[in-house]
Image 1: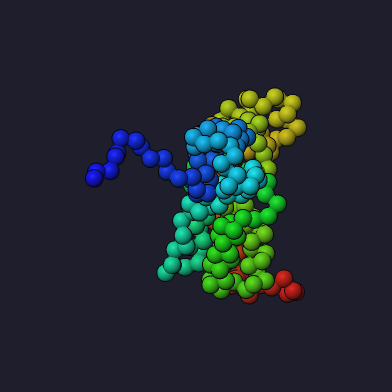
Image 2: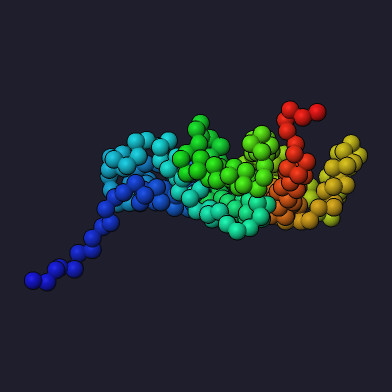
Length: 230
């Protein structure tokens, strides 16, 4: 007896399917527009079916964070600690650029999710394996902050004038009052698409800061720095 193939079978609903559909919706329209109703429509189910896999919107967001962090490349073995850490952070950066809403969700969480904890644990392990003391690693993790996940909280937004025209765009009285800002605005590389701010090359600025931090951390490691030292 032959099996009927005329009717397509719908994939069974699962937690992973729910979370990946939610990530896709957030990628498309932003996380603010995500609702359980819209997610159910996208999956072709009634909203109540979702609650068998996520108990509420907050658990959904936690799961979405884990999906995104899970896309970061695994640790690279057989290389020095600095290269391994740098490569992983730049992989995280590309991941969060693919999902620009995710950094906002992570910073809104009251507790880190399991996959995020595993990622941070592995990064701590990379520093420890590289010869960092537990004491120094503790301070390094604070100094790195969100850069461990490939994004940073910047001091300035995109309101500053930029490029060679920057001084001309800034009102003369402001340029006179803040000459160093006006000078810097005319010196920076121009990148209108930057999320750091107009006039900043996003990737270059991120890698510049990352390399400064890693080099500084390495000097402290080599000097056997401790928080209780003189």
